[in-house]
Image (cartoon, rainbow, N blue to C red; front, top):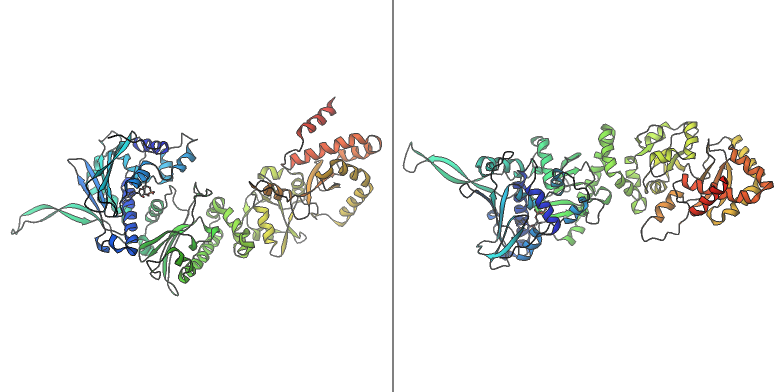
Length: 627
Ligand code: ADP
């Protein structure tokens, strides 16, 4: 029989499994049992609409068999099975092969991380086996199909006898090595404890033949050892247990197993709600942004159960987009089992649950911010942008609810602060919440405008994410204080005298400034003298509603040819020697002024983190100064 080759990425993953130094090889059993349980779920679910496919609920089970002589461990389920095409596509390739691609630039990535990150599922069998055989049959097939592989050199698929619908996976266990004892996976005791550890809550019985001593038939004192099928798991879903019966370890491994994360969750919310609608919810906030969070494949949603039976894997209606990072399950006896997707969307109970869950997550986050700031900052660094999106989305409909969860970097505190904290510290004469935008905190800190405000002791919020300024615009005010961009031309932090002085300055140099503005053409709205730059000669500010940062963000949206432009003002420090130079030259050498205007404008763009419109011209102008 011709061997088929694994797809490239699958082969890579497989190699990794086979040669793995991963210390938790035992997770292979959890992975295979969880696949078996999913397959039974699927068959059960189908049987709700097509009774010819199903079994009685109590007949569904997962069986384990140990054969020490043959050195095999076998996992049998009576789930949905796989057609030959499914065998090929499910086991010949990794469904999530894109994820491996994602990491391939970094060959040194250790396998622990990858194994954890992708929850590599079926292939983990190769961590403990040197041959894997999968016999499987679906309800629609007359015969079964058999998939065999010894690892990375490929696999074969052939027809085979299989009486029952479902899947049987035979692992031929590896020989012991110095580092690893594989024989333990042929011990009843090990298997029993692994099931207890990782798969206790699986809702179908996991059966294993266990040796028990019992009285010989007809005898009163003679014992014999017999094999008896024993159920290993308690089948009580973790979320149905009382909080005080669940250890941290159990929560952690439940989460990591079910949601394929290799880091423990940052925060767990486990609640029982009774009333208008009753449900158990077990929600997890991951500690890190999942690798695929920003990919188009990411689907938000909670697993939905009705009385312990899963009815939907990712029910997106249960989570608002801005809490899309939350993972978890909801189990409610009030939901009807054969509810369809469309119906669910309109389901009153579901809406009620969603509303409660949203409230609960919000209040848990507020509590975390109040009681455990470090933890909240970890959260905010991973998912703060979602909160910002939430404020901005739907025309600000959720802004009021979410605004107190926002954090921004403070120039004076040198850490993330909330808007409330900022406002509480504001001196009484300060009327607006000050902010500045840029690529990094350091770059913002170097902005000429920021420099002089630092001198005056103002606290400024440094915004580094594209969405930040849009969020503030959406809020408009916080605690009745407006927001002011320190790079806007009308930022008002001067005393009356200072204002008057600079007004005079501008009026008396009007001709010079207009001339410079004309030279620069459409690039600027105006050229002005300013008193807000400490030691720096120039900066750019913007007039009106669109700031320079907003223009940058809008023009960086792919495929959008944004017509939205900031109205730029070139501001020149009236205290700087450059100002005097310009004034004196205006009378004698206008041509030079034109060149200087261009140089100053280009420098100001560079300082503001914008590309220079004509770099060659700038270079020539500077060289001309030297010769
Ligand atoms: P995952 O379970 O994360 O999707 P796996 O590599 O574990 O990834 O499995 C790949 C696919 O193979 C599964 O999604 C499922 O469709 C199929 N599969 C695996 N085990 C079984 C089984 N016991 N019965 C039916 N289908 C299975």
